Image (tube, rainbow, N blue to C red):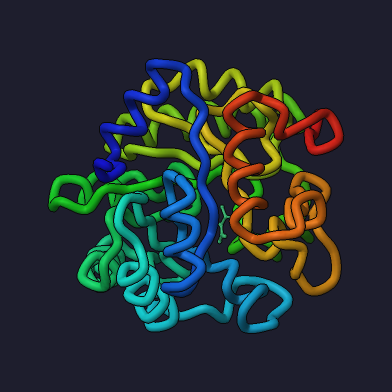
Length: 264
Ligand code: KIV
């Protein structure tokens, strides 16, 4: 069993092998996801909503993410571990460096940042200093108040072109992975085809190289509702490990995401 690295994900993309990612916040769930074969685990700032009970991700701190990254690290053997940089922890390149270093020292293999052109200098700085970066475009939840709600992005031609341009610029700056969240499936397909680096989608259709979901949605325990683009696998399997295996199988055979999970 070899560890998943950015090279593994690049190989999956080149071979057309779809891979799976899932959020995790503690050692026990992370260990189960890792041993069932989830390739990428994300200590997401979604913890602000699913663990801490806030309405959005903005209250999450770098200390919160570092603590949960260290917990997840102790539970896993194979998966690539990405840690989210929370709101306002990467507003300047120097702040980005200092905070990204904390997450790497807590056990992350890569850090994730939300945003486009304004982040290029930081992505280049991090990469040159040995910190791999996963970029995140589309519905970037830390900008929910700018968007005026959790809304699908990139539906009009100008915004679609901007997201495409930012994806290419982030790759050129050194990003090794890209998450696309809640954008039309056709746009996600074009971006995935245009980039050499692997692209992971959530609410971005079936044609990205990998899929990511929030674990609480997969296990049907999110407070409130399960987003339209997600799927409760516990409901169809009745057992946590079987639910995870069903998610992996459906991503691999292309049956998830289905038409009802996709935006146009
Ligand atoms: O915070 C998070 O869980 C995320 C994923 C939804 C991609 O950023």
